[in-house]
Image (cartoon, rainbow over all chains, first blue to last red; front, top):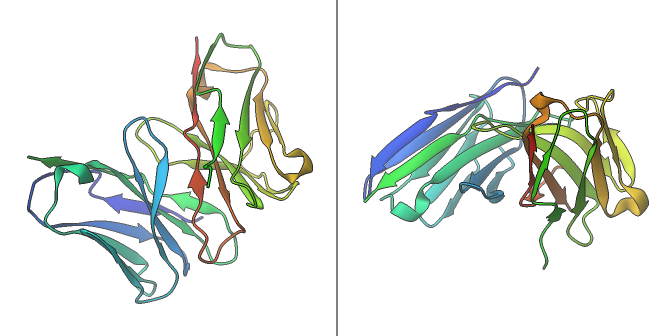
Length: 111
Length: 115
């Protein structure tokens, strides 16, 4: 059974600082997705990572995928308050198309 | 491009009552998903449709939950009878097709409260 774990679960950081969120998964997969969710809102797609070594960047966020280590990272550079949200990674075990979401990382950026 | 539309946004019912949620996916999206999201957790897949066919309903509690996607467009999810533990946000998502480089596009969800 595919398990997806994120850490940390909660992250409070100062504006201007850098930090990394980790997403580990337990079975073979070559597709990983990152989503953002604001309180009371729905999920918004951030990145789609489709192969080992894939790296995507948008603004202050950069995501990478290491399929051999079964690990994805979401790196935040020079955080700003607007990045405060919950971030989810989602994985589907190869060939299943059954997406399993992580428990989420709740990020709070302090001014 | 209009997004995924869900209704109602909020629903409060007493336990043992029936309830239904409606979803209109993005035009041209063949794949439709229903998820359940409990507070502080990630979404959990209930059912996935490819056009009008339910291709994965293994996580759907079929004793009380049912879903349909007539004509491969709109979809409804029904609970009958509702139990206290069903209180959650029910999310609908769609994608052009399954897998590959297709992220899922989510609606705003229906927040269900069971009294």
